[in-house]
Amino acid sequence: MWIDLSHCHAFPKFGSFENSCKLVGEKRSVVEPRKMVEATTTITGFHAHIYYGPKTRDVAARVREGLAAFEVRLGRWHDRPIGPHPQAMYQIAFLPDQFVRVVPWLMLHREGLDVLVHPETGDDVLDHTNHALWLGNKLELNIEILRQTSSA
Image (cartoon, rainbow, N blue to C red):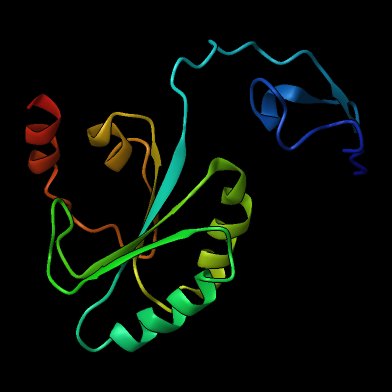
């Protein structure tokens, strides 16, 4: 079976790949995607939290050196749990236009470390839960701390 995907887009403006192309006979053709409700949340930036332990701090340092080549703001080392984070970590911050560079690099070069990537939308609870992307293991965050600070 021959499938012509030349007129289909992996990232259409609205909908998904499946909604933008359909199988017609032995070829795919473009169809009008279902319109999505316009997003009301704005992403102003991203954070990536790189987690490490006493035995992997040197690994985290190598990853940090690699991240320094990107347009990111490197945060302080936190050798103990802080805020909602259950173990030692450092944070990097970057603008939305850097996501396509930074996150794929982390996917390939995190050296086995667990990484939380989340947007900055102004809702810390949702950003660290529903909107979060995990590379490696998903760690159990103390979301109650975020709830307390967001309601204060």
